Image (cartoon, rainbow, N blue to C red):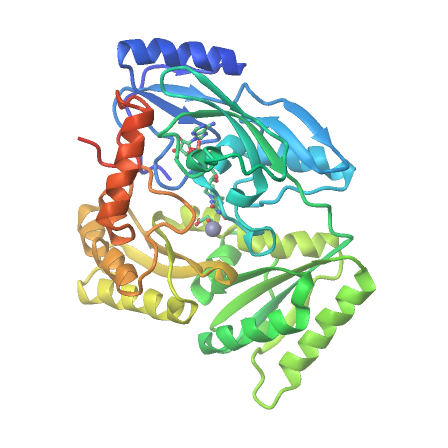
Length: 441
Ligand code: FAD
Ligand code: MLT
Ligand code: ZN
């Protein structure tokens, strides 16, 4: 994003958990801060040092340790790239339980550390459910081996859950055991053009009812986000006549057991949507082959890249009630206009897209440059807006360096106090990713 810069002089790239342990012990004894780093694709500056901490990059720990094709349980080094793991399990007819636009660079350890959500959460749930075990090097160098492959294990506190989403503040994840689902026999997708945002909620209801068990993604793209993706060559856009009058788009994916059955269900859905008295959609375009399937996904997954080609992005990754998605985007745009910042002073676009099915909106403000004036207009304005809806200031990207001051909008004082006690307990010298997630004294 070009937004976060540290002053580190040293990067280490250990190859084994034992090497990680020795490095961390060395740093602990000398009180040297450490920033665990995966693929460096995070959105909130979590993998970037604030000062001159040591960067501990997991990129050289990239071996699959084991895979059981019967249970689908995969054990991998934390530095394995998500796409490589997808490729590894595919011939065994399995898929990774998560997918996201950064798959070509992000690492499974980084995914677990951010509790990344992404495009498949609607179907396969969060990593809190899919991760069966972890191997973690604690801030004093001890190796905590909880790399279990058990589906069921109620032997007291489930420590691994603490490291899922801890953003490297409690230890370094070196190994991950996770459950991979069987590959669907058939996957289809369709892009729907909607005349009005008001149709998104009833559409979601209808889609869930009609597609039921085969629905695997329901992603929202507003018109500006769509136009930006097309402008910057991401995926395949619709024809001009198909997008005429469309206020927003929804990408629906199905993953099921029988192609004909799934296609029939999708065609029935389209018929319902187009032929009802007040049609919920203007048009719907079904992918006809694997290339079109990938191209529709590329359009959705390419929004991040399109935004960064267009300018500098102020990214707000929030959970708010689905019915308020459009209001939140419109209110933010009007707020920037009222401050004289829209168009005149560098703000080019205010866009909304994201994981509607999970209540997760990506509100992006695209500007010519990062300026204090824009920043001050956006914060705490957006965080207060989110809090007014009892939402979350970070749905899936984490807190990192960006939102430590905003944590209180979504977490109570008691919660923050106990988070700080836990941090103190695991990392009494504060060497593990200092300045991230929590503002410690
Ligand atoms: P990094 O960015 O390197 O690190 C992220 C955080 O985890 C840091 O705090 C770092 O210190 C810590 N960390 C990394 N590895 C370890 C480790 N082994 N042990 C301990 N701590 C560690 N996120 C979503 O949730 N959903 C999406 O749909 C999504 N889409 C994306 C699309 C694009 C194009 C991009 C660029 C990013 C997207 N992201 C998304 C952001 C997401 O957080 C990251 O892509 C990913 O989960 C981070 O993995 P990483 O290996 O790059 O971690
Ligand atoms: C996405 O859903 O595409 C991502 O989380 C990335 C982003 O917010 O830019
Ligand atoms: Zn996302």
